[in-house]
Length: 296
Image 1 (spheres, helix red, strand yellow):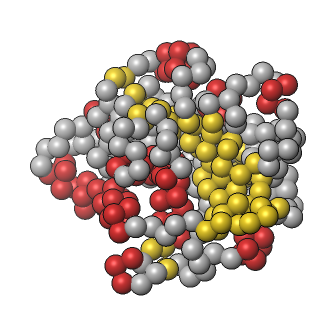
Image 2 (cartoon, rainbow, N blue to C red):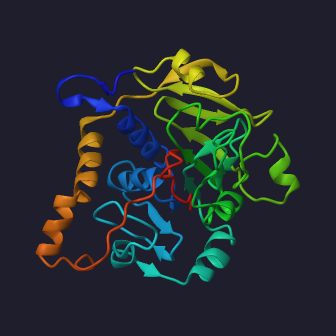
């Protein structure tokens, strides 16, 4: 699939396919515990399109954040500036998360296996090379264990979709159906993995990920080649709807608001919560080990 699809005003990239379909997956959620990177892009897009009433919670303790741009980290002041409430981190985890009060946990990954277990800790780079150390778990293990359901988002490649994790950071479905219940984990666990090629969902009988939908322009051969195990498919593979002009405009506006020139304009105008704030590169929770962010 080329980097651009469609024509005229409806051209879109593979990343835009991923982000828009991830946002659509939140259309029926009331509350979402958001990871930085691709999950945050999708969750904020959902609040601007598919689900305006969606309440976003971040690990730093912000509830009901409505950022006007994509946050750079869970500690970005924009999240607190626009939140309905800010609570302590212990309260966020002990009361809201571990109390089972969150509908959806939305996470990224550096590696994922066939049972939707996640690695964001360390990657083996091969003989005679040092391991690649990643930022680690953050709150992801608790998010995956306690939310009513979990969504995962990452770009589809053999480096990300591996037959065996180099390190298990966050449990998805363990070794198959029944592991979560045996370990006392509430909720359904990962219910969908959204990539730039399509959507995978756990088989109800085995919990192994199955390709159920392809995005416009993507092929089954591409999905199989990008997966490090023998990919199972649904009997009938659906095709996701292409992005609408409204969705694309909302996504591009959201991203443009965080561009360096936009940030400079905000600071020059004395926008609250932005002037003088140090800016660091945003971690990428989409599966690139050299910049993969914490999941939670």
